[in-house]
Length: 298
Image (cartoon, rainbow, N blue to C red; front, side, top):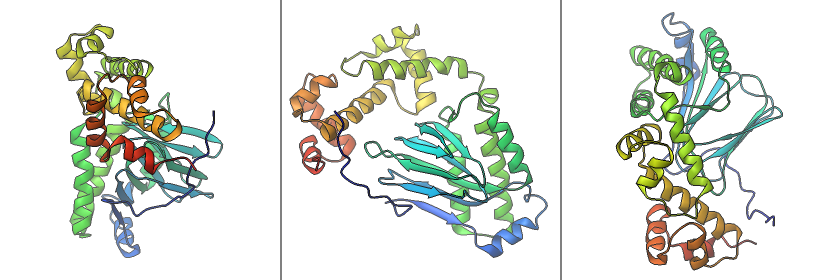
């Protein structure tokens, strides 16, 4: 059965906790004149946490390349007539001067890092990016990369001095290189594919309450090795990630179905309704019954 979505509300920006910096024209001019960084430089950078109703469309595209990196949640990206889903720990680079649209999932809004960048070397980076077999591209969770992104935001938030612009744009090159060449830089990516298979296994068995040992055994790994690999890729423990998937699925049932709370517990593998309600409130900020009432279909 198909249900009508309750809202067609769409916003470009203005999310709680967002950070966004756009270089003024005079600052961009100084970057263009700086031979150290003018071959690859950013023109805007931002962070949109839990971006509910986020939607952006440019029918004629943009004069810069745009990097979108999904941290949590999910969303969709359309480039001309090609459609892509952007999931956690995946990124996509939108080509310049090509029509595109991207928007956050209504049921599981993304948290997004984004950068607009340009320059002669930007064209080369984009060609290297296209050499990846799959789009969007998976990039293993890396706390150092996130700190680097936050450092760029922080520096530009405080100063547009020439030295700071050099630091940020030299860091940008390193940031992009680690994304585009992540498989070469992180040779453990073959083992990390087991984590991707484990996540797929979780999604296919969302109604079953597997133990950590069960999840590790399914991938022919020890609990210790499996847990380490899983956290390296996702930033979360297997149990925490599995519970997040269950709560996401529960949100869909609350939103789209007429099932009651007890029935939803069964569908997502919880035998204890009260534990489910506590976990739901911890993750979503409100009790499931309140969520259901607030998201009744019109």
